[in-house]
Image (cartoon, rainbow, N blue to C red; front, top):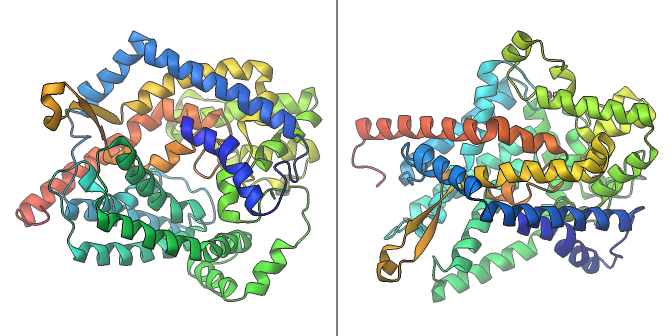
Length: 467
């Protein structure tokens, strides 16, 4: 989280703008305020992390969750390749059903069954663990067949991502695996061989040569997004392909003058989601225009979003003051803009906001204290997804090694950007509170239930396969 925060606000922006020949403050109205908030929040992040490391009760909470809850149920066990693949198939099937049949690409759907299927989305990326399992599992060799299977599987992910109109769905799984691979090398758990250097060079050449294509692909998803409420998922895919085949459409969109909401910071739309300071600039700009009534409205909306984290039956039973349909179908960025101009057609555009402006609007400067308190809870919960064990190769030196749970691996990119406005990150405190209230329980529960069902299935029908 800390490295991701540093990358988003301090490391990548100057690099990305320099590459494109722009100023670091390009198209920013409040660069000084952005950097002030960025440094202030970074200070809070570092202080709370140190407090977490030094506070015995927080360390005990982390150890209790990892050793007494997660470990006994098999959270840190690595499934066999065939089990990972089958779990991935269930995840990708859930994506396909929600988007092609239930219409989830158009609206925020409701219903217990549909919500359950959405909970399985992250598992679609489990098969990618096959590629880097050797970091954690000794004597793990990958058959070439799996490389072919994963390439085909990636094509399926891409097709469904077009149907979802989601860049994050397309890139997050691969990004998480790459981050895990880099972590394994830096930590010394995986030693690069000569052939690995050639492979890395090969993939770097492919990546660099395809940056333009990736950027156009991401831009295509943005262009066709406005049509997703009018056409079917299949038509959305065909429209995306049509747009990709017509570069003039992409070029015209890039040169289209900005309206009431301008997110332009760097031209490469792929990099823009990894270091876009314009999200913070927009939120701070809107915060400066807010009156007392508008600030109260934003505070009320955020509280409603927090209540909306709970299941609808519980909300109705407790009569919680929230309009779940309203607050789940618009972002905090939408509500910030709506509070200023009153145009309700804005709602549903899912404009990306920033913790800086949104929380300053809702809570004033006390948001810094709230941020710190939330982090003190987040750190032990998120760290519980990892396990410290004695290194068998270093027994005599009493050296331990870190094991990442499969859930931690497939969500590593999400954790990397968790405290930023990047795709998969947090534009407000709602995402942080969501993880505290249910995220650390819900995803592990769904994962471990699915794992043991798949484990039973493979033992019954093919006890010797996939080892």
